[in-house]
Image 1 (cartoon, rainbow, N blue to C red):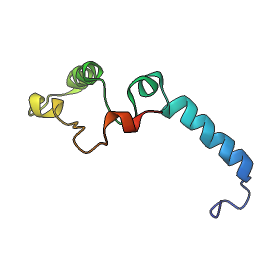
Image 2: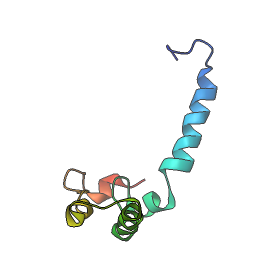
Image 3: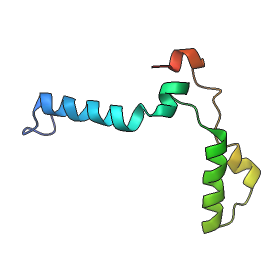
Image 4: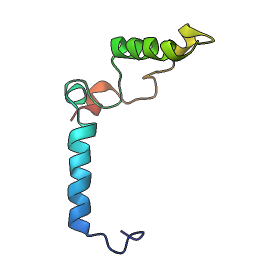
Length: 78
């Protein structure tokens, strides 16, 4: 609000709520919690990236995500 003097607080709140509802709280997040990934979907994404270019180390790219720093799954549920 400080950066946009024409912004209206209630409108901005509505926009933020819509973004969270449509883009953050996806069916996957609702079922499994925030912060994790679907390993099968991740593998498919790597396959798609491989179509555009070679990986130096495909195995390392596949291990790029770790949930070691996330809170326990039950704390990430909505």
